[in-house]
Amino acid sequence: MGKFGRAMLVWGLPAFAMLGAMLALTARPSGLGWLVGAHEIQPGDLVLATKSPSPPLLVDVRSEEEYRSGHVVGALWVPLGQLGDFVAAHPVPVKRTIVTICAHGWRSAMGATEIAARGHQRVSSLAGGIAGWRALGLPIETGLSAPAPGTITVVDTTWLEQLATVIVAFAVKPLYMLLALALGLWLWRRRDRDLALLGRGMLLFFAGETLCAVRGMGAEPSDLFEIGHGLGMVAMGAWFSWGLLELLDRRVLGFSDPARACALSRFCQRCWKRDPVACGLHRIMRMLLPVLAILCLLPLSATLRPLLVAYPVFGTLVRDESTLVVEIAEMRVYPCFALWLFAVAFFDLRKGRPGVEPAKAPFFVGLGCLSYALLRFFLHHAFGQAVVWANAWEEVTELLTVLTLLWILWVFRTQLALARPPKADGRVATA
Image 1 (spheres, rainbow, N blue to C red):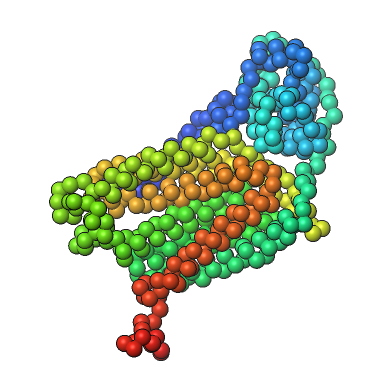
Image 2 (cartoon, rainbow, N blue to C red):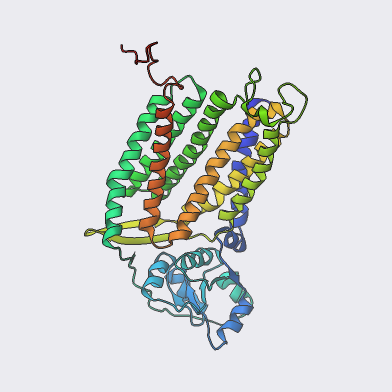
C-alpha cells in the first residue's frame, strides 16, 4: 500500500466512518439519545407514570405553533433555548421525574441532556415524541401555557474565585501563550526531528489557544472557535509526547537506531537488532494499546454536560458556555478517533520491526485525542457548575506543560546543542 493509500486508510476512512455513524445515529431519535446520553421513556410507561401518586413534570420543548397544535395533557411549554433558564428559575425536587417532549424525539433528547447536566438524574425523553403519542391514540390538548422567562443562570463566586479568574485570564494564559509561541518559533525549523516535533506542537497549541482567547472576548461562531481550541490541545498532546519520546529514543535509548545498541538490552538476553526474536518493548506497547483503548470508553460512557452560566468577577458578569456540539466533539468524536488510531498502531506493531515507524503517527495523535478528552472529562465531573475552578485548573495544567518542556530544554541545552559549546577550560565560548 502506497503512502497515499495508507493516509486515506488511517486518516480519511475514520473521518468518513464517524460522519456516517453520526448521520446514522441522529437519523433516529433513539440513536441521538444514545449519542448524547439521554434516557428514553416509552409512551405506555409515561401514561402509567402520569397516573401514579408522584406524576412526572412534562416539558414540551417545541415551538409555540407546534405546542398550540396539540401537546400531551398537562405538559408545560418551554422552548428548547429557554430550558436551562427554566430549570434554574424553577427548581424541581430531585425525586421528581422530568420528561421532555418534542415532535419526534430529537430536540427532547438534547433537552433531557441539558437538564441532566444541571444535576437532575431523573430525566427522560419521550420516545417517538408527540408523533408517536398521537399514533397510539393517546389524549392530547390544545392551548398555550406561559413560557418561562429567559434569564441566564448566574452563579455566585467568592472573592478568591474572582481573584483566581483574573490571575488566570491576565497572567497565566498570556504567559504560557507567549512561551509556547517563543518555543515554537525557536524549535520548528530545527533539523533534529525530535526538536522540530516539539516546535510544531507548541505552534499548533498557540494557534488553538489564540482561538480560545478570541472566543473569550465574544467572537462568533463560538462552537467553531472552541473546537479549534480543542484541536490545538490535541495537537499539543500528540506532538509534545511524540517529540519527547523521539528525544529520549534518539539521544538516550537508541531503540530505533539499528546500528546502535539499545540501552534496554541489559534487560533482554537477546535483542531484535541482532537475533530473529520479538522485541520486548514491542510486546509491552502491544499490551499498552488495548489499555489505552479501554480508557477511551471512559468519556464515551459519560453523559454529556452542556453548560451555560454567568458569574460575577469584580463587578463584571462573565459568561461561560459549553454547547452540545462541543460536548459531542470532546466526549464522543475524539475518543472514537483515538480508538481507531490505537487499533491502527496495534496492527502496525504486529508487523515487528517494519511496523514501528508507521505506528508512531497514529499512536501519538490518538494519545493526544485521548488525553484531551480525559482532561475535559475529569474537569467537568470534578467541578460541575464550579466553572471557575475547572477553567483555572485547565489553564494551570497548560502552563505547567509548557514550563516542563522549557525546563527540559534548559537542563539539557548543551546535550541538545541549544547552547554554545564550552571551551576546553570549561568556559562558554563567546562570539
